[in-house]
Amino acid sequence: MSDVKTFRAFCQICQKLELNCTRLLPHMDYSICETCAPQGKNQSISEEEIENKVTARWTDTQVQSLAAYQDSDTFLPFICERGHRLQATNDLLTCDICQFNLTWAYNWTLDWSWKFLEPPAGAGTRAKLPPGGPLKSASIALDLPEPNAGADAEDFVD
Image (cartoon, rainbow, N blue to C red):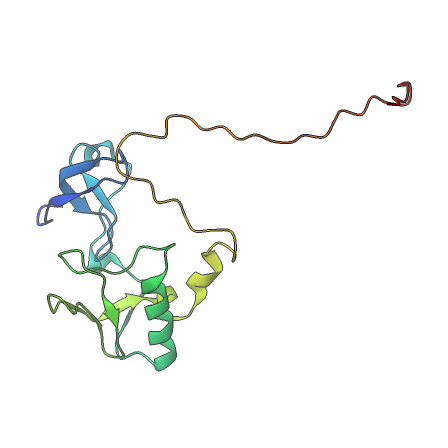
């Protein structure tokens, strides 16, 4: 991790906005801060270590899958170095704002298999909590059925 760039980001381990973070996954907004990194919970992965990359030129069907993946609320999209979401084309993933280009994508982002991991329709999307402390408390009121008194119970009549 000697040539790794650091930047301000939300640490996935301590859940805090920190100044010196590194990306754990190339071109995805999944970062760890310098305080959590030595704990060894997660290791940064370089592009060279990724074995399931598929290089462009992609088919129209693959681009449709990749574009839908990029728009999903469930998964981390591919981003440029400045954090902009990349747009899928047949030849590359590109940033329309800063002209960054990426010529590979994970194989599972190109074949719609990522859809099997999305929550079912109507189940909602993952919770997007603001940075900061954990939830303080939550309570849910449930209407529970009355306990069954058994065969020895008398019938109550109003």
